[in-house]
Amino acid sequence: MSATNTTSADMPAVRMKGVEKWYGEYHALTNVNLDVASGEKIVVCGPSGSGKSTLIRCVNQLETVQKGTIFVDGIELTAGPKNVEKVRRDVGMVFQQFNLFPHMTVLENCTLAPIKVRGVSKAEAEETARKYLARVRIPEQADKYPAQLSGGQQQRVAIARALCMNPKIMLFDEPTSALDPEMVKEVLDTMIDLANEGMTMMVVTHEMGFARKVADRVIFMDKGEIVEVGEPEEFFSNPKQERTRTFLGQISHT
Amino acid sequence: MIRPFGPNEFWFIVFAVQWTLLLSAVAFAGGAIGGLLIALGRVSDNKVVRYLCLGFIRLFQGTPLLMQLFLVFFGLSIFGFGIDPWIAAAFALTLHASAFLGEIWRGCIEAVPRGQTEASWALGLSYFDRMKSVVLPQASRVAVAPTVGFLVQLIKGTSLASIIGFVELTRAGQIINNATFEPFKVFGLVALTYFIICWPLSIYARRMENRFAATARR
Image (cartoon, rainbow over all chains, first blue to last red; front, side, top):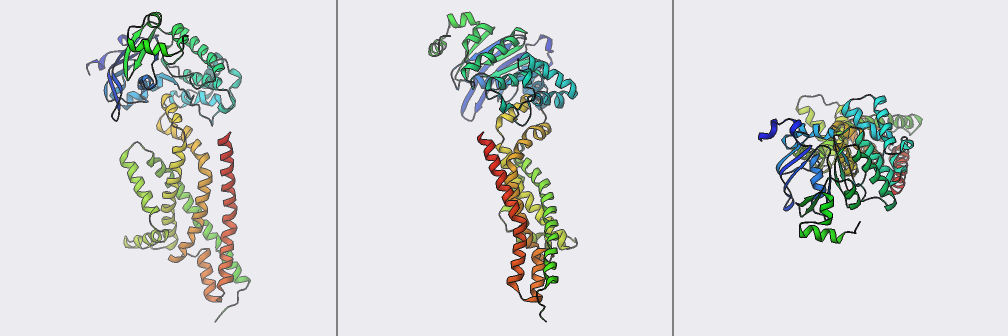
């Protein structure tokens, strides 16, 4: 590809060009083109099976694509496994099911990757971890195991764990969908803090209140396609596409 | 000339248990190393490695242990290696244990939720760190009970080494029986000795299984 030599300075944080993905016969992503600027907050929404999770999972190559190119921070992800490792170091991810390591304490969860991948000392990694645990407002839980925490606390640990790698981009794959309702807010508040600090974020969520408050752009996907992209005000009050209107009509008016 | 079954005969059999234990220990240790490699090969991204390991497992699961012992014992001598029954038995049982432990541990590795691997990827962990720090520690909790269960099978399996002439517990029993013609006493003692070794292990395995089931429920 001709763009391989472009430096990160004039590249967006994420650039997807002509991305196609199939699961066997099933067309999961159809001609996806998307640029995410550094510092931008993108909310991706859409009905289940629309490909929204698949889209953000392509950014750190948890899903591979069959066609198209993906650049993350100027590095061509689709060019080979070496680049994949490089990109993953700088892209944090938060999962629906938290995916904390159950056999490690909260602190160990947060220090494992910095020690193993970044090569920082244990003392330094622990200091960083405590800093981020304080920022997600659970400094006192550092020595507990994940199973001893509530869902909301676990998800905040997952956010802290990702932040300990000092990522340039954060991906959130339905971070509040597995939580009890009373715990949704504490996680969203943490994400709002993060957004206010200028983090580049791509968030798959059904929390439209969060989208209104935080998103620079909202993306609506259906059947593997990006149907509509717009600023939240415009997107919610005046959706252009019929499919978007139908979807927004179906979800609760928040 | 028939000897009576006296204390000498008794102790000859009981002392032979050390060779049974040693053979079991060597085969188990070797099988643990081989089994880990086979298990990792079975969950590898590389298709060729995966199928080679599968073939290895199928070969040893699909043939009797006795044939495996014969093939190694007689096979090694064809290639000009000495036919020391001790080496042949240790080698054959190691291969056997590698295949079975490999298959058991593959299942344990696959029992670790997919999300753990994805989280490791997302954090940029290397294959080595992902296995060592995330996947294998979790798999090993599930593995304790079936592994001890297999160890019991392996200990009993060492009795077949008697057929290629390795003097362990069973072979010692045969030798004494040939001199005393008291098969019921002799093999009763042999069986009891196996039982005394294996029974506590079985209890331990069951206890670990229950404990794991309890933690899984929590």
